[in-house]
Image (cartoon, rainbow, N blue to C red; front, side, top):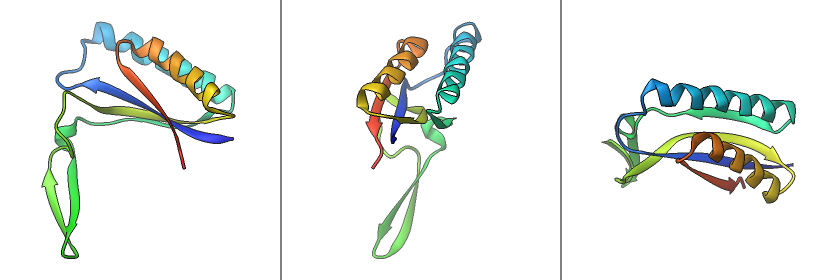
Length: 113
């Protein structure tokens, strides 16, 4: 089976209030259990805000560190799930279920090399 990355993109700024976020997270855990039961779940994680990131680039063979996100934007990668799926259609089906739970957030489905 191939692996696919389901990336969750969310708007910059404060997270939604608990009345919105808690049901989403509860339903996301139900989906994770469904993925596990199907043998499709590999790994999932949420990320801290982009302001906590450090970017490392090599200049003349030396690492140069920069605080903050790699790119500035109105959305950022908020979390991801790595799954196993027979093909892209199956991965898109899982991504669609995640999208329904996390609406209006965007879910990007990408095959892993």
